[in-house]
Length: 549
Image 1: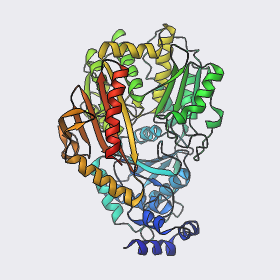
Image 2: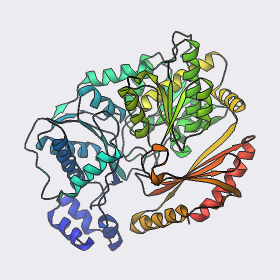
Image 3: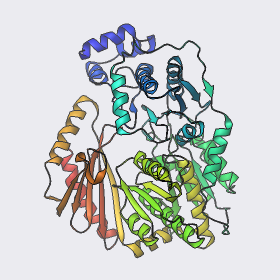
Image 4: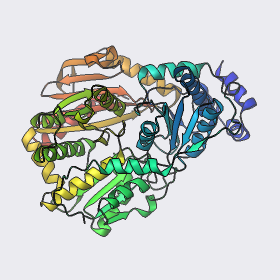
């Protein structure tokens, strides 16, 4: 079907709300909305909310759900699914639509009755013994986005093979003719005991092991108008952290994110209000979780009393060292301890792990690959060997109770670690600098380049083709080796990722985002100190900027 034919079909069959939107589209908007279908990958679906085959709406959600339902009915006897949603625009509507389509296909449906973080769906899948989980979320993207995230029966995001099989089923579905209609079939609310057990598991991740800690630290917390408020506050307060100020403007769920248009705790703009609150109350620690509460950003005071944001890499290194040191100190380290990180996460983590006798497993970008490793350990009867996993994009997990990054777990561990060191007169900045002096200074940065619409998609492909031809040097540093993960390198699944290993122990990773119209570069620079590292990073960034124009 041509773009024009698809457009006219939607004008004929869609509901009045969608029809009205379509009638207002320009030629370019029609092209961008219908030039392709939203693709279904290991991250499920993600797209701009609106009318058309390339946007997220009740019809694309219905089509994806019908395809997934067909897959489940072919794969399982009496399949079931657990569904959750966050604060994004229409998340509740899309969750309800998915629940109704599953139910219409004879699949047992468990639906969270209110918004909750994404890790609670991973948890519910395992707790309820469901065949599958669906979370309606677009993580930390701007408000115009929403998404459809899918978990397997192991609570981990679906594998590449499963995603391919589901996509094949989705391709067979006509969004207007083939999606089964709900006729009042049973949809069961997920009970409070599931959340209670989740909260209990998070609290079990403490590594104090009886050490004395003053928990009266002053914390400012922002859920960034997302789903984190209830579980994060419960875990902190039930664990003795009472001195908490919540950012009022960002407290309640609001998919428009009025005070932080890009609700990503990785960027300073999203934390401006929280930092203002910190200055007002003289807080010790700022915690901020993204809308689906699987990432955590933090800020702490430096030696001058100024608030400093710590990167995902830096927090991950601190947590890894804290967990390892506490486990060793109290004789709680498992026999064959394992830490898992992604290939774009700071390599310094591997050196810290080695110091404590912990094995490092490196995986492709995406926490699903960390979750997959936990599952593999479980199959070997070594689930307890997993002690920590993290990625540079502010995702952390210290337990095997879920198979995805968990902002509730991250916020709790960070608060505990902060209080532990503060009780002993050590700031997180001081601790971080001591890690750098012990293991060497390393600077990691992430740069994203956005390419919207049909023309942007084509340009992204052209740029990646050029990078695949190879480079001799980047930013004045010679390329000593190129690792092409599109060929399935080091036993990992094939993925369109290139890693350029440069001289002087530096590297650059280039990859397309799996969920957004973006190309991402990850720059890692080792140097004597921060100043020298920043100079090298600047040269590399300037050259890459030219290549992405």
